[in-house]
Picture 1 (cartoon, helix red, strand yellow):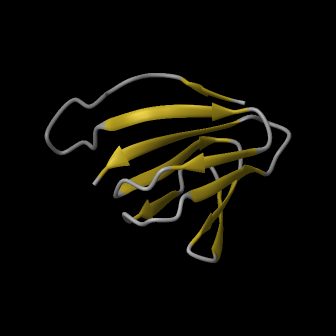
Picture 2: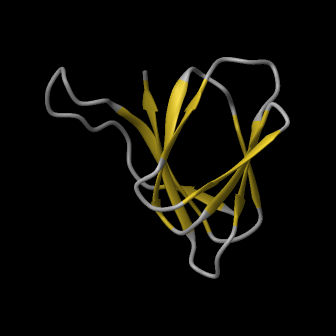
Length: 88
């Protein structure tokens, strides 16, 4: 189950605008590709994109380019996963 946490944030033209933040307690989340940056805030994420797997820890980011297949985000720890999506 996932829960949106906040809407848009950003304080200047130099800061990315957070499209939204998501909390996933367990399981898998399908992420629509919209030319964005996924940033892990807490927890550990296993991300599958275009047949490649990535493990992201808090503070790490992954650039997600527009594509026809969704990005799969799995929770890899007992702690809920919280991640944000920023426009590029």
